[in-house]
Image (cartoon, rainbow, N blue to C red; front, side, top):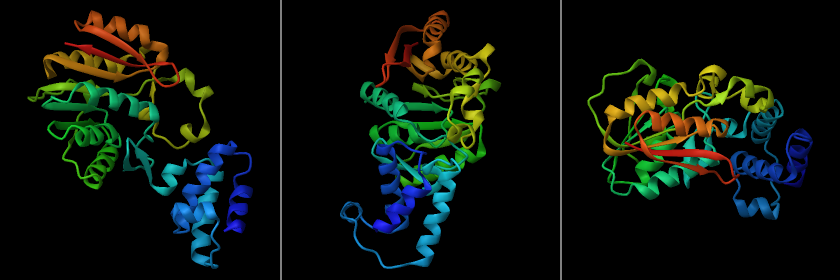
Length: 277
């Protein structure tokens, strides 16, 4: 085992900070060596295995090229659940888990809920698990993302429903929802220069970026559509770009929503907003 750990250190030298490297090493060893967490920490001696070592080396090469660990091993934890992920969907972030917890804490009695731009389904599936009495739907424009979301729905034993819907095309929908939640594309094109290559080179840009001159594109569409989709007194929750927090507050108020509330994430950035119809 010690020799394998040294090989990992050599292959990934300079790519990760010390604490992050330890997390990556543990994930790689559990995934490719077939060992337990206890064996990883005790540095259990392993018999030579050419096939195993070949798979590990291939993973190390992908990591060295900048591919995210989650795509390489094919899954990531989120809110205590396990989610399948690949290049068709964004990797769920800790901030989004905060949004899910906020929604779940305030909507125990909700009968219906919609996640717009569902991606991997992490929001919809987690809320379906946390609120078993609520009928949850997820919408996305990407066929690939919907395939991943349905797989995660099955893996986690939930009964969310997923549909291909383009919110920008003013779709005709008969359903009504007590809650709409969305983490739509919100990263400005001008922010690309400060982003890591692991994101820019591997995660789907259509799920990330909006034009600088129309940063609230998806939020406006959802807020407008929400006026017919939400039940009276229904709640709208968004994950947002902190740079546009005040603009979001003004837009929702102008659109006829009230009790608009901004919340910060664990890093102190204004990352979430709620409004009531």
